[in-house]
Image 1 (cartoon, one colour):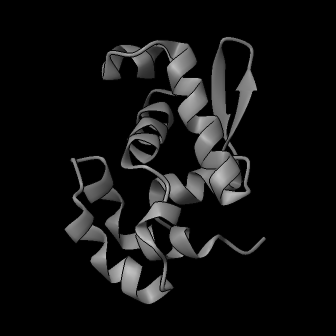
Image 2: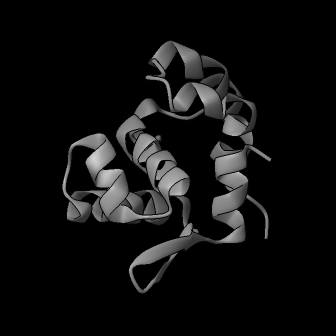
Length: 108
């Protein structure tokens, strides 16, 4: 499955996303994609996804980000909806990344 153009653009920038990326950090993506910043997913949803991918848990990610697991789940669903891809699979008390989720998280 082809990745959303934003994922391709963010490929080499993922470490920045997890470290309070600024709009300036993504200027190359904006130029490359010819997108209006209002159509880019929020940095909050990207940071939340990063925390979920690292911890493999919505609750643990919530504790790390000082938000509820429900807020984490909502942010991940929002990012999935924007990209049109399922990024995580809910498995009992934890989550697993889909191949697309792994690719986004690893920047590959």
